[in-house]
Image (tube, rainbow, N blue to C red; front, side):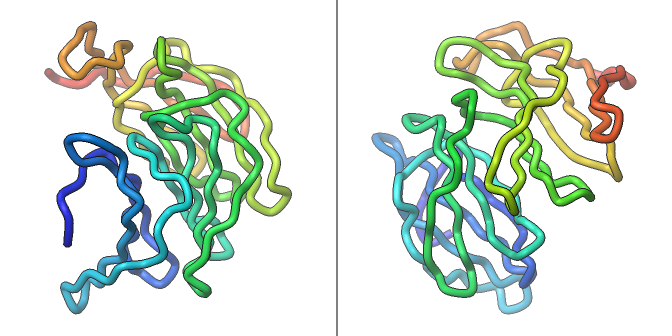
Length: 196
């Protein structure tokens, strides 16, 4: 990257560029945003994010917009980047303010903002954003609230892997558990624990 940054949100655009948004250096959140061309191995600056955040999450909507959710200092923001015009707009605020969530887009086109940290505690909320209606609904919460976990989707199953409850980097407990959310049945099941 052209600058040193941590805690930035990233997403693969419909143009197959990798987009990186905001983040922080050692003293404050950064407004800088970039896209990375994998083929040419080049970085290009894009429009700065309106409100700098770090420890946010992002996903690409079916129409190509890339949506950044929450983040340190502005945990209820929904900031929408439009790659075709290199501009930003605002979306409906996140109902439960969050940073460090898992964010994935499901086959139904809705974006799932799962778990995270509210500034005081880990949360287990499943917050579902409809990018077409610009509205939020709520799913069944995870069994164990967590943040800083791995999150991925396969078909209609969202996997939340590991994580912890504290907002501090080195504070325990840490988890080796796997919880799986089904976007169709709005229910959770348990997967095989991490080996270590």
